Every structure is written in structure tokens, then in C-alpha cells.
Amino acid sequence: LAATNLDIGIQYWLGAKVEKPGQLVVPAKEVSEFVSYLGAEKLTLAAEGKLKLKITSRSGETVFNGMDPAEFPQIPAVNQEKTVSLSTAELSQAVNQVGFAAASDDSRPVLTAIYWQFTSTGYQMVATDGYRLSQKTVAVKGVKLTDKEEAVFLVPARSLIELVRLAAEEKEFRFGLTDDQNQVVFLLPSLQLNSRLIEGEFPDYQKIIPQQAKVKVMVDREAFYRAVKISSVFARESANIVKLKLEKEKIIISANAPSVGENKTEVEAKIEGQDLTIAFNYRFLLDFLNVIPEKEG
Image 1: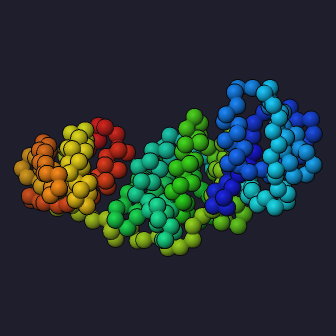
Image 2: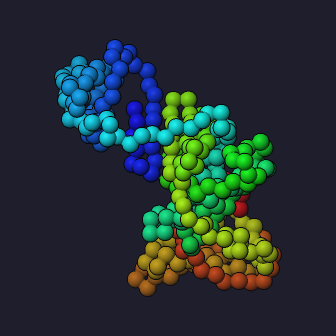
Image 3: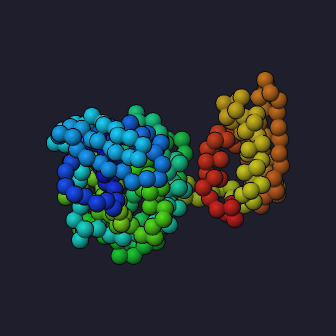
């Protein structure tokens, strides 16, 4: 089975008794919905002419109108000798901790991508939507996709998030580039996922990240998360803004909405540096807190 929207494509192999090989192109949405309503039973698939698919089950027969297979886009292939292997668990954690910061608006395609950089010591992922930025570094040795010491790819965040979902039960996966280096191909035992790479210049994120911190805060993740959630009840009616006031040994999280009321919650914390008051979009805080382990803070 193969499907593509030209940005991302998937091929899936499943067991079947094939009496006569052939190809058909059928409407994915309607066939998917139809099959989901059937029980756990064997199906017989047969081509009726060149443009129709007949599905026979215990309860009846169904025919779907199709298209000429020659019109279906060609799924790119990759030379498996030029692929490398990565841990699914490590990639899954990296994508989850970075992907949330990628833009969902396609007006600036480069911001919908995850910046994926490979070096001799591993890889790092970076994503930003222009308002927030998340970076994750993973130590891996012996990963080399090109002749260069360093390689950078802009992979759509949606593609990597979909890969993580599909590869959840696999320990490892392989991936490589197509010969024209315009697409990346991920290989699993019974599945291949390919994604186009995004062209453009990713923001110079290293200039955005401060080299030194004037204030450092250590706080219990769960307590801080709960306080932000409480304040969000009021922040939703006030442009999603919550205020954080850093004082000696505590953080005061507050939100004020004229039509609802106001709230202040104190959380114990270890603070190094001067007192500070700063405001954030509470959704940005929750997105980050949702993807870090509970013991971190």
C-alpha cells in the first residue's frame, strides 16, 4: 500500500495471498472509512478492468472507482547501503521535546521545519516559531550521511512527528537521502516513510540563546505545572498572559482577567540572581512542561 500528498509519502507491506500481481489507485479516504467499519475478517480484493477495485467480504461486495496507476506519483527510493541506523527512543524524545516549538503556519515554511544537524559526535534538533525556541542534543557516534563532516537538514516537523508515531514499537530505524538529496527516507521493517526537505535559511538560533544567565531558577516541575494550569483559568480571558514574579525562595504566578477575576499562586524555588518579574503566554509554558520528565525542573 502506498499514499502520498507530495510532502510526505508512506509505503506499507502486509501479508497477502496474491494470485495475480497488479496495481490500482483508489480514493484513500473512502476506502479507509469503509474498511474501518468491517469486522476482523478476510477480504478478497480484485481488479475489475483497469480502473475499479472490487472488495468481497462475508457480508457483501463493494466496488470503488479508481484512477490510472500511471498517474500516481513515484515513491522515491534510497540506497540502503547509504543509510544509517538510529535509536527510536532517542529520536522520539528529541522530536517530542523540540517539535512543539515549530510553527504550524505555512506562511514561513522554514519555521515549520526541525533543524537537524549531524556532527561527528551526534546530532542536535532545533525548532522555533519566532516566539519560542527549543533545542535538543543527542550523543551518537559513527553517523555520517554525506561526505561532509557536518550535515544539516530541514525536515518538516509533521514528518518527524508522524515517524515517531509509526516507529513507536521499533527499537531502531534506518534512514538516508535520495540521490538528488531533496528527500529523506526512513525505513522500518514493514514500512517506508519519505519526506521532502524544506529549502531555505533557518534562523541563526545561536545568536538568540543567551550565553550567560543572570537569573537561574530551580523549581519542582509538578508544582510549577499545577500553578500555571491554575492561572490559565484567568489568563485565557486576558490574552493568555501569566506573570511570574521571582523573589527569594519562591515564584509567584499570577493572572488577571477583568471579566473573571484574578489569581496568585506561590511555588517554592531556589533562585540565583536578582528579583525579576516577567510575563509569558501560559500555553508556551505548558507546552514545554508537558515534554520534560517529571523529575526535571
